[in-house]
Length: 245
Ligand code: 6GU
Image 1 (cartoon, rainbow, N blue to C red):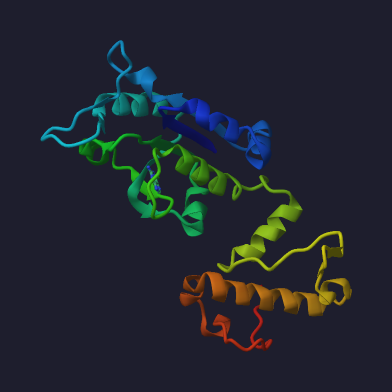
Image 2: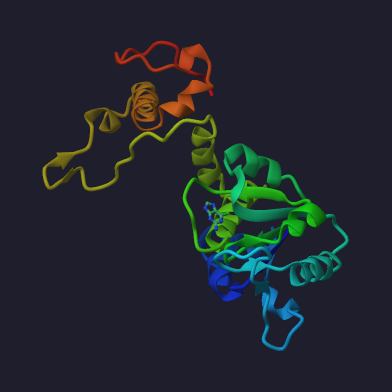
């Protein structure tokens, strides 16, 4: 898989793509990630890529020529068709399902905005998938691009080790994770639940499933809404209808 990121701040993005699991995937040749400076495609000697909005109003608007020329130049560097993604608070909300879809594509081109917005003809002419990572405003799309790249790349075959991939599966059913503990058994009077020390794997599995359900119900009831009736939380801690995933 190849990922290109078009941004005013490539130096802010690169270190993230060199770190931890992403960095390991890049070094292992499982994905290539290229950060491109939008200013390199500016038409004037000042490197300007934005201008004032027609009709007046506050702020600046990213203009068409640098973006179109960058997209064309970057896409011509590789014959695989690129899925164009525009990071914008006005986009569709990015989630795990969308990450899975994007992880199947051979090539992604992420376009990060800054300033008050994009010239509308960028949307019309490039027909990108418009993505937002949540209902809040960031100063630019870079942090969102890092989020999307991270969530997508970890789903590519071979990126996670066997252990990490197993842990991922328990989250992939749409609920939250169960609580985890490691040494020491007693930390400042806070002890590890007995069941985890019991060695009874069936009891542990049941306890974790119940904890995960309870957490999801308390913190993210919206995640339960779309799920089957057998998964609905009842406030009682009974152990009915455990799933077999
Ligand atoms: Cl993708 N961009 C910006 N600027 N703000 C955001 C966002 C994206 N997603 C949530 N807030």
